[in-house]
Image (cartoon, rainbow, N blue to C red):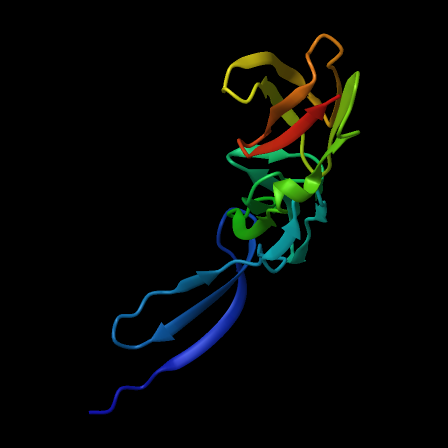
Amino acid sequence: MKNIFVFFFSTMPCFSQCPCIKSAVIGLGKEMANSHNNLVVAMDDVHIRAGDAVALYAKKGSGELLWYAKGKRVNETLVKPYETTEYTVKSVMESCPDAYDRVLVTVEEVSTAKTLTVFPNPTSNQLSIVVAGNFISKIRLYDMNGRQLAYYDFADLTQQYIMKLSSLNSGIYLLKVVLVGGDEVVKKVIKN
């Protein structure tokens, strides 16, 4: 005996008022399967440089689109992550099950040594410390014997700081700058 399969498609309410597509296979006791009209397809995964922004979007979406990162709602679709982040897009359509997709935004680190500028060096009175593409978390100044002479912790995000050195003797010092995220840069500073 040959098995006969018949496929049919119809538009029927299948989840309250969801305009779903129902399909069925007749024969061999198969059940109807639902294919919902609520769908979402996120943008392709993307690589950005640290400090750059990216606009989140969906290639396809049939409902209202909501974005999330690390379990929290993202209200703006122009984002500037400081670390690699997975974003979830959720499509909400009245009376239909929610649809989800994900996109990975990979943040490529820029060499921290290239993003930190210390000037003038040599200096006599003050030293400017400037970082691009990140923020300063801590600054430490050591003498050549490893003794800590000065320390600064920053609660607010700052990209530049002017350090007064007028009270120090002439000599060579080590400046350690810790950036947000934990990267450290050590520079030799000469005080005249």
